[in-house]
Amino acid sequence: MSTPIPCTDCTSISASSSIGFGPVFNTLKQFYDEAISEWRKAETLGRLSEFLYSIDELCRECSIDGWDGYDSLPITGDACEEAKRFVKSLPANFPMPEIVPEPNGGIGLEWSKGNRLIFVASVSGKNEIIYAGLYGINKSHGTEYFSDTLPLAIIENLKRLNF
Amino acid sequence: MSSIDPLEILSRFILQTNWFSSSENRVKYAAFLPDKNAETSVFRTSGITNNEIWDIGNFEVSIKRGKPILGRADIRANNVIARDLKVVSKEPPLRHANIIGWPDERSKQKLIAIELASESNLHRR
Image (cartoon, rainbow over all chains, first blue to last red; front, side, top):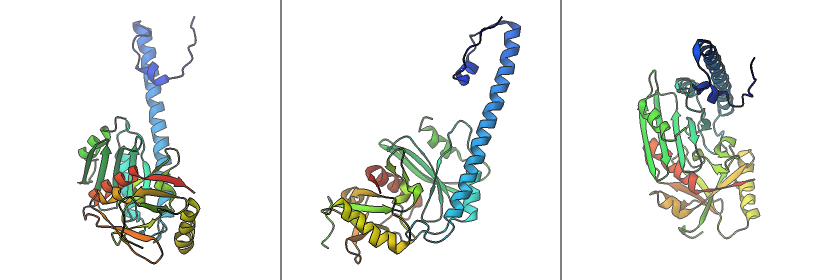
């Protein structure tokens, strides 16, 4: 006999190790963990493809001079591809950023928790990441070469937002 | 107009949807980033009514640029000056000014723009 338990927060159930014991429980838990893991992967991929589509949309919208109503430069295809590469390299435990077109033709990726906890990394198709962060009264900024993986400095700055 | 008073309000008109957050009611940094001439265009809006400010946006920015004004970021001149930037009057049009003196280093520009955005007030159209 079994008693159904409403699952309102599957993540916390999957993380729990004290709701049963014995070999049957272990087998079931393994199945359950695998199912959760697959669901997470699908959710992440779904969000990622939606996000990549948003970058394409933005690039179309900002592909002409003066797209901001002032004197902005067009966002190039190289900048778009680099923004996508950045997002694909992002560890799964970080949330997706907001996309911010910049007047110099770059694409900014912004993570924020209110007005004074903000990190921005931007790319413009030149294999470099220009970043700046505001963490209360603390600040950081710099430039990192962007090769195959995200530079450690970017990951460390993102961690300062405590996601 | 006379030289810029540190307590003056500067208004930056926003014509790009991704330059503000409606849900968080805040301006995003890109609204303050300098253009290719290393300037950020603003209007000096102290002492005039809210409607008059929107009129400036409509007639001097929106119609000329062929894009609707979506909002504006208001900031005091002293917040700008505190970052070693300068505000210089550049008329016509009346009340127009530019924020100049941006550092060459782009990451530093970005940081200053983040700070200015965090100290500005968003007004939606």
